[in-house]
Amino acid sequence: MGLFEIVHSLAAHLPEIKAPAAPPTAKERLIWTGVALVLFFMMYNTTCLGVVHQAGSLDFLQTITASKIGSLLTAGIGPIVFASIFLQLFNGAGILNLDMKNKDDKRKFLETQKVLAILLAFIEGVIFVVTLKVGIVPLFGNFGEGIVTLADGSQAMHAPFTMALVILQIAMGSIVILYLDEIMTKYGIGSGVSLFIAAGVSFAVITGVMNLIMGPVGVVDIMSEGGAEALPNALLALAPFIFTALVFFTVVYAEGVKVEIPIAFERVRGLVPKLPLKYFYVSNIPVIFASALILNIQLFGTALQGDHFTIPFTDIDITGFVHAIGYVDSQGQLRDGLLYFFTPIYAGSGTLAHWEFITNATTPLFGIPEWVHAIAYVIGLALLSLLFGLFWVETANMDAKSVANQLSSSGLQIPGFRRDPRMLESILNKNIFPLTVLGSISVGLLAGVADLTGALGTGTGILLTVGILYRMYEQMEQQQMFELMPVLKGLAS
Image (cartoon, rainbow, N blue to C red; front, side, top):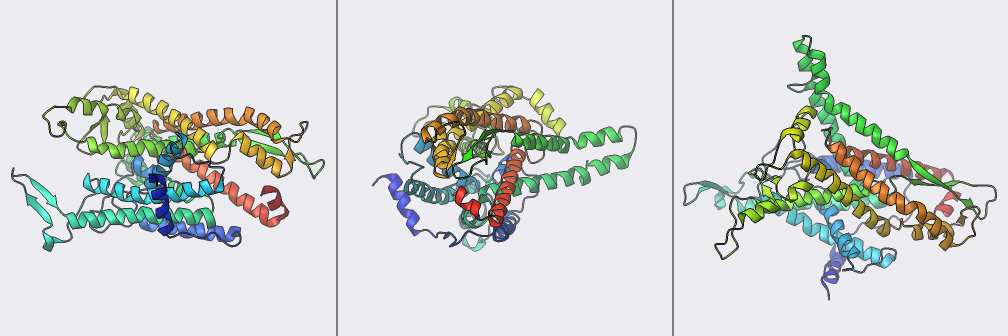
């Protein structure tokens, strides 16, 4: 029995959310979506027992993974997305040999993804705790926990029981999110993972706007000082919000760009609707996977933290080689090396500070200009988005052959061409493949460039949120149309 079969066999012992006996109504879907959001924000704002409460702004990692360091959602959706990335890469490389168009193989994929996500939830919990990304407060002092003095005179924390408890809480938080995602898929509107990303980004934007207006150096404070420069300074303080709005409207416009192919119903003469193929054909899925991969590279890169490295059981110094791969500072952030090129820009608060950092700063070891880092990050995000876009089209049955079969089985054809799935596939492929390539690259470039503006909630976060909300609106509209005209369900099935 191979490793895949062993992991898949564990899925039979896990709880499962049963599919509804009848399709939920639009009202029921809204209720389930609301319940999932309430539970999400309850965990989002609950600090783990044994963890120091941490106040402050959300960074890129927390925004994109719908997480909050120190809370029950410290790992957020990271394990779920990363598990999907692993399996898609293995399947794309031919290691798993799963046909995602086959229902049994697709079920095996999803069940294995659930098991792997649970395992990764515990692994990421260990990483967050062991690397001290969360502040630990010893809870079991009677069992030898507390601050101890080492032989060299330095002090260190000894709290193994509290650390184990925090790891369990972080892992359970992600596992609850995993099952909420399953509930959303079967009973709610859209995907739970997408919903939680949108919720996290929206929360970051709202709190960011309030800080820009009411904060210590916000608009209210600046205008109260008066003077000739008060108004220009207030506008500069609002620059992150201005760029947030600009990115928002750019994404809304891009979402509306589409190619329309005329189609006809075989059984309904004279009715010639159009099949809309969006420019963002694969939606924001590629940039979700690409961002999650980049952020998990940064998370696992914390293993490179240290100033001196040798080969185990030898005295051979490999510090320079390790730092060339990735240099991690005392805060646990990648700041130099090869892996640093694929990390987002961290430049503090404010658009001006963001741009000044990109323009003038260099890396601490190799002196690489930050503008080189910025260009490499944007290009890398675009190429990763292309890779995951091509994978997603195949696994989600969005390729030309699958769409042609769906149209043909529904009694649809393109006017002027004979009713043959192969003919439909040939015509559709002339549009679907270019849209997949261009849309995936464009969504990656747009997200990367938007990140460089210092927009609230990050440019990638805003792009994801707009796309997610747009698709939720479309699904709600479609659900209402099906309830008003039940005959359409037969054509859409």
